[in-house]
Amino acid sequence: MEETKKISSAVIRRLPRYYRYLGELIESGVQRISSKELSDKMKVTASQIRQDLNNFGGFGQQGYGYNVKYLYDEISKILGIDRTHNMIIVGAGNLGQALVNSGDFAKRGFLIKGVFDNNSALKNKKIGALEIRMMDELTAFIRDNEIEIAALTIPKQAAKEVAKTVVDAGVKAIWNFAHTDLNLPEDVIVENVHLSESLMRLSYTIANKEE
Amino acid sequence: MEETKKISSAVIRRLPRYYRYLGELIESGVQRISSKELSDKMKVTASQIRQDLNNFGGFGQQGYGYNVKYLYDEISKILGIDRTHNMIIVGAGNLGQALVNSGDFAKRGFLIKGVFDNNSALKNKKIGALEIRMMDELTAFIRDNEIEIAALTIPKQAAKEVAKTVVDAGVKAIWNFAHTDLNLPEDVIVENVHLSESLMRLSYTIANKEE
DNA sequence: TAGATTGTTAATCGATTAACAATC
DNA sequence: TAGATTGTTAATCGATTAACAATC
Image 1 (cartoon, chains in turn orange, green, purple, brown):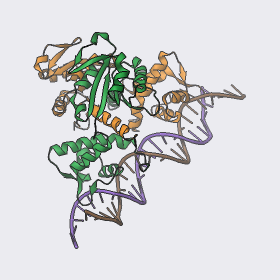
Image 2 (image 1 turned 120 degrees about the vertical axis):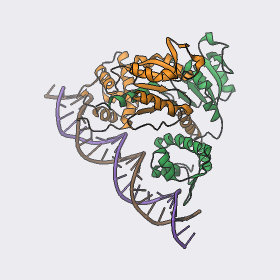
Image 3 (image 1 turned 90 degrees about the horizontal axis):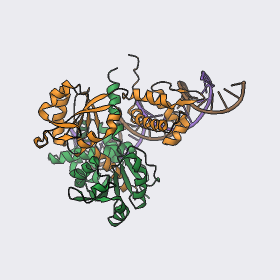
Image 4 (image 1 turned 30 degrees about the vertical axis):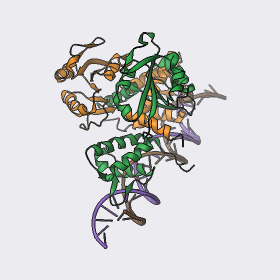
């Protein structure tokens, strides 16, 4: 009941990028950095960096700047990646496989516990070490494995129904790759990845540069 | 030298979503729609819809609303998807395969002309009808096939170098799936798809709902 | 014509940048 | 201590919403 001021989504969108740059700084052995130096690297204003960070607390020190490792850890807490999250992938097509096979997510604590598909030809097949399961196991699996996040890498026709199923089974958040809006209750978290919209924005920029 | 007012990226981000809803309306046989009706469906304000569209012209008619098909076509022109774009995929892993196998992009005029990888074990292998090519063919292929867009589905270590190569060969725009910033000349268009950042935003929302 | 709804101007709200006192 | 740089307030800029005259 303390933290009442709402953080804008513009700030949240930038946090993972700060996190990435700080991680790279750690790797190159940098121990401290000022908002000015970071702003040069990231091509944003130093003022914005300080404002953004001060939404969450005073992580720096006057006259010194920021301790890179400390700030990195603090941002990881803010982003909720200081702990693990159990996750499933629904849809074992190429995109689902890509998510399973990418080590990037596991490295950040997003643990893929199961992969599901409705194609019975895939039954008992594996993606890496992970067996592909059929949809009739979905609800029980979510409950038994305390799954928080479901990634939907399925066609848009199936998305709304599957979304409802996983939410009813207890999933808190959906990472939606299907090209549709899911229209779920307000308290369900949805993060959309609409690749074709991304490609259209790219196309817009091409079209409007040649004027 | 007429169109000088810069369109904000907030507007551009929304255009593909309008386009998607209008497409669905066409499919369900709806011929006209008012900004109010569309605003109810899309959960944005009617005022925003009218403001957004009027950046590009007066597409509606007082007392009537908007002709769905006409508006759809006009937005497709704005987005530059009223013509085809030649594209290549660099990186034939799962993600690259997912892009090649998805019909969605071809449907919108993004034609995948080639797939490249540096793994010689993949030489002469195919993804669907498309043969995987080695990186030494990259530059010539881009020139010979008038490639406009290169999707980079490769590890971040390789991304900056490959980006430079494709740009030097004549690519206008990069669809970057590698988790790094590319630092290219200003006139090169870059559209980033940073999946792990998307997942961190989701994680942030989980972490900050349980307060 | 009367009613509906746009196009557009004005008002509000929010986000970014600038400035500087506080302080390490 | 003097210099550097944060944290934070104030100023600016931009985006969203409201309102309504224009007009189909």
